[in-house]
Length: 376
Ligand SMILES: *Cc1c(COP(=O)(O)O)cnc(C)c1O
Picture 1 (cartoon, rainbow, N blue to C red):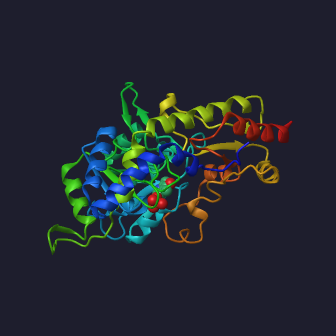
Picture 2 (cartoon, rainbow, N blue to C red):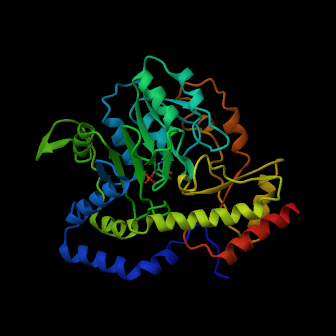
Picture 3 (cartoon, rainbow, N blue to C red):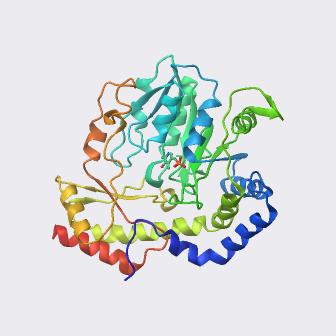
């Protein structure tokens, strides 16, 4: 059996190598390394895939979040509501811009922000909500949009982990995650569901005016060459990464399907183990793209299971060991009542298993047998 890894980028590359290599070569031959035509081409293809008016490529998913916030004309001290349980970028950019993060506890079933806790956190300084579609499943966007509309707030979806997933509204209408709020951001970090071979990111919006503004911000606040209308940043997706993404975008649905298949094999084998809670899927099968396959282990056995996996050479991840409210860098900085019972519970239960497009049945069997034997 092939060695099991958390992700297998090399195995995935080998299957599309000739196309990727050809496209990279074309870029090198063209010498159009920055803002080449291929970047525009990828932008158009992603717009079409998502059915969104504007895709603005940028350097990474953290920049994408920062640029989205910069586009909203916020003032120092304005409050941004977000989840307590995510990767650092989400809260980091809020703090870097001198804004105040107001974090909300999660729904322990999905690990996503609990929309019913948002209204209570809104003050007259609240300007935006950043829901994070964690581990590959969309937040409850309908409720979030309702709160946002009622309170005149902007919504920025952090879609770094859920590209290609769909969200179903209560009228059964479906929409791609990342096209629902005012702005959405994503990351093309290599291990993401659509990953390049370096850093990359993008911002999506259906608003022409926000798109115009953000295209300026990514390019030093420049709308006319060498005239700078506002303070921007330098955040570009380079042409070689765009060429790779253009090839891989064609496979994104297939890749996500592979993840869903792996998830259902995992689910089936854990069925009979009481101490294991498999990922909860709120809606249809296409609503979860399993950026992570994250179990909750009951009865305080998570760390023992982790030791057992380590001894048996099964890789795993703990995402995330702490809520933002306990992280040294942030805990003093945000307004909170320190009341996060669900995050506090979940952080000691979560364990993420290997999840990627190249997992074989044999590997999955080995992983599930290793886990079930621990409990039986
Ligand atoms: C990966 C990730 C980011 C940041 O993306 P980078 O490209 O690494 O900057 C932001 N938010 C979430 C939820 C992520 O998972």
